[in-house]
Image (tube, rainbow, N blue to C red; front, side, top):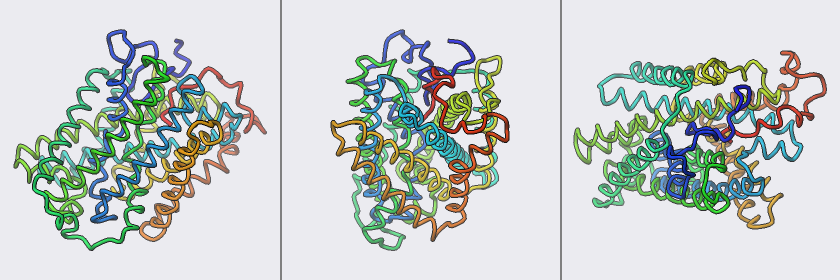
Length: 462
């Protein structure tokens, strides 16, 4: 593989097609594939959004996770069917390109990059607050720690360091064990009144609002599609792994929400939303519980930052080689990584992590993924006759969730919605003119990119 091409099959866990993902020269079976998909979702999800969803949905927070999980499940089926049909790792960007929709693919790629920058900032925000909480630091310490982890992991990525797949699998099982144990302990003390303790009772519709607001907790399963060529019997393994992973994560989120709310009360989780699970861990096992959950949180969010930064840099590289971003963004350093992309992404995420509020960052990231997943479901509904009804459910569900979330943001955080709207308008309407002004695209080339690095098809986390 030449250094001028994006890594084939690159994904959120940082493995190249030329380097077997399991480290033994063997292809990934169901367990490894399931672990990678679960890791992609749980990486920063529940640690970041638990307090946010309870603040919105109150006693219906568990139902919010269930509804969002059903949308994710339909979308996962759509991703798997499209990937199998195309016979290679793809993603929304490549699915659109294969249909000759280069302009739409270019616009969507910009929106995706924005979404992943927001996701990295959420993970860094969460990392910093969990670490500062256990060390007795304040808000400034948390912000500094969040920026520091982004800078550190950007430096790691610039050196071309790859994660061990076996270590990733071990970490996934470890954090799942911590979360399930915490949930089981809380559920063993079942007290339904605690589900709404300290918060105003919410109407049932709040569950739908919460589902849209915290949907980013389910992004990550789609990264598994980029391991298509590294799987044993991929046409069978990929769909099973994606479905099992989403079902597993949905179940984990539901029981953790119920268990921790019973354990410490919903109001406490809202007040301590930045470190909700650490507070629950301390109630369960004292200082030991606090440290166990905190270690799981910082390792999980740190791994998620690294994975997302790696994968998004490859997306930027692929898009730049298709002339949908300035070509300078695709330039690789001596270690063979797109250095300018990494630095740019890390800088943007660090600024957001240092200045943003958790709820606003989570909701903004969720909006971008709801839009992307609606597009993927729409493509699958059109292209595939088998289980097209599932894709229609995913399309309708993601679209409704996005509309409900937009309505909430218009009331609760209009500036955030306006900011997203401006970025989306730039991606859709101003992108071609900006690229021409930067000299990276000849005039009237917005719909003619099929011949630009046609081999650069994988590596984007869509």
